[in-house]
Every structure is written in C-alpha cells, then in structure tokens.
Image (spheres, helix red, strand yellow):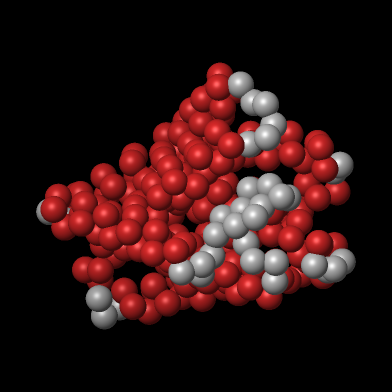
Length: 242
C-alpha cells in the first residue's frame, strides 16, 4: 500500500506539472509570460513551506539537530554542484538561456530531475502520508514553470506540440522509478529516511532561493512586489492547510 501511495503521489507531483503546464503553450506568448511569474511566486511559497514547516521539523524529530541540519546542508551543496555540472537547470520562461539548445539534453536532464523528485516524494510518503501529499504538491508547483520552459525549448527544436507533450510525459515518468528505488532501499536502510527528508529540504530551499526568487527579480514582466508576496504567502498557506 505504501509503495502504491509513493508511486501515485510521485506521479501527481511530476506528472501534474507536465499536465498543468501543457495548456499554457496554447496561449499567446505575451499572455504566457504574464502568467509564469505568478506560478513561480506560488511555487516559491510551496517549496519554502514544505521545506521549513514539514520536512525540517520531521527530520529534527527523528535525528539529532547536527545530523539533520548537516543533511540539509548536503542537499543545498549537492544541488549547487549538480547545477554547476549542468546535469539540469530549472527554466521558467520561454526565453530560458540556462539550458543547452539540444532537446535531448533537456529530456535527459528532466528525467534525472524527476527521478530525484520521485525519490523525495517516496521518502516523504514512507514517513507519513500527509507529508507525502504536501511534498507532492510542492514538486508539482515548482515543476509547472520549469515545464513551460522545457516545452518552449522542445518546440523551438522542431518538435510538434504532441511530440513535445509525449516526450515530456515520458521524462516525468521516471519519478515512479525514484519512488520505487527509495521504497526498496528503505527495506534495508530504514534509518536513511530522515536523512533523505533533510536532504530534500535542502534541495527545495536551494531551488527556491537561488533559482526561483532571483528569477522573479530578473523577470522582464513588470510584476509588483505585493502580488508576488501574496502568491508566495498563498503557497505557504496551502502547505499549512493540508
């Protein structure tokens, strides 16, 4: 039962981002660019809320503070190194210049990213179902702006809308493999789960604070600070209410 919940929620997280982002590409470019900053602001709130109000407290209940915070720090540094190695980058607009122009690289990087997200959701589910639900929501929220960028890059590379959707969906499906991998590993290393939660918190904080928030400041669309703060607070509030 736990395995089904882990796989199901991992698919909700990664697959939800793909599904919600896909209709945005049917809109005119200027309309899409107006909507994406709001999605990013909401994603920032969900990531910060899950990391600081759910994952970190859970890890601190199961581990001594130095170990839990050490794993959190490892998550931040780990994602920094992965980004430096260009294994993946998060894209938030159609004009993303962080990705290589190769569509294949986008899909490979997305597959690795989704595998990691699936493992994070799986670890959260094995800890508690409510934690798994909130983590899946955070994953879905931050996947949406990334998928918008990925769709745009694939279309620019000559993919049809249908082919871009199918390939992005296949890339997202690796989240299920991540959830299964964590479930299998938990049978012989159950004590590793709180470390995974703390590591996940670090990764969410890194994505929110080093990638998404600076992107809001640099966005060419003139978005006032008040709407951004309201949407960030809405993201945090969603996590608190779940």
